[in-house]
Image (cartoon, rainbow, N blue to C red):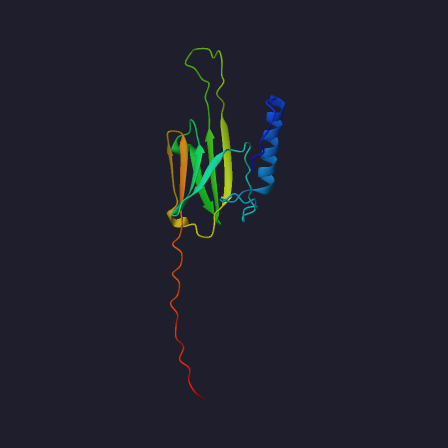
Length: 158
């Protein structure tokens, strides 16, 4: 859930970020965007609300997140009790070999987001990949159960 701010003032941008974090942590998220605390009791425990896109196709749910500077080994996708958790961490080293750092604008960061998967998620076929700084998680949908054929019951006499 994101609140939009109408002010360009940096103070209001900071307030907006804090409010989004508080709301996200308090309510948690489901994969489809309904506010609900995850079944495990774990809401989003992120120091920053990491923006993600969630799409639904006829065959799957797709989650896309920008992960600049992260290698696949820096990203974790875990599933526990129907809750999908996506997290990552980037560590920046400012070491030089005998030189002096004049300016350091890059910083380390981490994020973690959790989503409750819908009942029709096929948890055994979830895949995740990082390509050109974008994490893509594909959650296939289960095939809907076949409708049972009508069954004729024989009526007997007493």
